[in-house]
Length: 587
Image 1 (tube, rainbow, N blue to C red):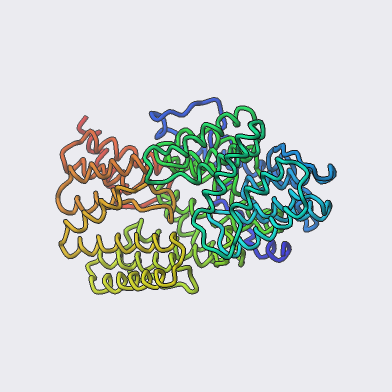
Image 2: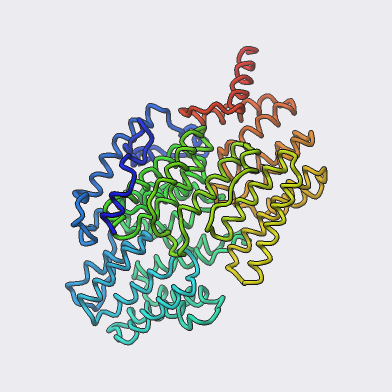
């Protein structure tokens, strides 16, 4: 697998010309400087700093993967310096202890394929090690609720673990907790996560000095947090546990990683900056670890840091270890964030090149274990998002269907077509694509598909309906629908990472000749999605029309700063420059 994939990968660097993989760690802020809300906008780097930073990261990535270019290397080469440090004592043979802890470290960085292979090696070297099978089972619990196939695989491993009768009560508690998640895999049980959370809470309270148990319990707490809970009580409880651990174990990959996930939430993101910057240092060989800081950077509109983080992740995904062990699929998640950051920072050419780069990639497994083709999914989502973000309405209307594609992804194409058509005045085409979404939704409901797919298609249906209503002059209906969506909005940070509902409200209100109301909506969007291109421009334009030159100047200035170093020729940037020049001339 490794030699075939490695030779098939594009020979060039994933970094743009003149933009190497430089001092990524310095670039994303590993310094003594403090970031405050007042200085967030000032942290966008100059082009000179960008080029200087990338040169160093090429060296950094090379050091993170020493001598891994030949095909003879495998997961035995993975070191603590590459994936972080964990201490997880077991009653297994001492000769497998180091490898077991290596597997746990990989697990904490969501390198599931590599972790599974590592735990299987432990089981082979010590056939009586029950915790090796716990580890294998744990790798099937990835990216949310396990699917039926993963439940079955996980349960088979847990049955083996239980049959080996772990020697300590602590180990049996870990196995029992995982059993609570996987038991009766043939049954539909919506309380699996609750049962697992309860079991991990018991373990955490019974073994207060067990940092591994505390970290995993905190992750389960975070996962149980509900978007409709404005207090985010479980998320905050998880953060409290993890922050204490972070002080005690600054090199623990799970603690830093789970802190980033915990703070990856509107209104909490800034708290995650220390962990985000630290995590990439802890596990520089893990593609997901290099990507994860960008969750925080994207939440805060720090586009250059976001870009550097994901370029490093793509490079790590294409490294020999990642391709050999099957973790190369992580690059698609990183490229999703890259696409968004490029389009928010005036780098449309890079966004277009990224789509072409995706076309050239070899076949690989998706990182989620869902069995779908990540290349087709990426081409579908990236293409639709790019045309909509750039207001290429006719191009969006003409997007082709790419087959075979996931249900929620095909809905993305229908949505882009419908919005493009509605914005172009072609109501017949818009209506036909809305009908296609409605038909798809009916099929998903009948077949009882996953709620995440059904919910995504439902949201596409509502957004499209709003734009068609607006095009038909039914603005009250359009605004009502979008306000309902906006009430649940969490911010947008990637092509598939949310709906900018407040921004859409602002667009419609602007077109209705209500700039003051539009400005309120754009400002609401910017609180959720800082430095978002269309919201910055929309706020500036609305303020300009509403005779609020001070606000218009501030938003246009912020837009140009966010796009500093880019080569965009977007008319929005030209107008912002023209306005600021006129203001300067008057002064």
